[in-house]
Image: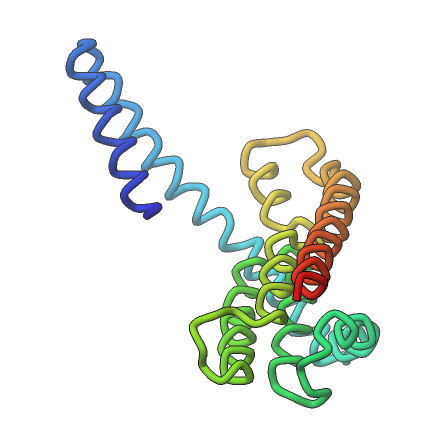
Length: 195
């Protein structure tokens, strides 16, 4: 569906430029954007490699294990249907920890694995379980302490203070995460009360 929306937007834009006589400006913008995208991607690689290295060091030092233990009681309450030592619990904790450090790219594979494990627990049904919905809401809201990617982009564009976004990010993602949990629980209990 998203691909269709993007294709429609591109076609409408090109048709508008043809009828408006601004096709040369569209061509120039396309090539400039492609050039900027490559430059930005290469610039992000160094930052992502750095933070992934930090994550590896944190893992070896036991910091991730400590964080996992710290969050485990909260995660157990959020996902009561998942057995205590089930692999899904480990993937969920790893996903949340990676998101906290702003490593969305590193968090995605763990999120997919967590969903696969929860789908198995749900008997491979096509309908999402309560845990899957909660995880999706929590993952989308994404509590972040260090917004690595945003800092990297701000550094790429010569921001005078690339890390000034940290405080705002913590506040907004904390509000979005709490809101996501509250909305998830509201609709869950509303469905229970209707039965």
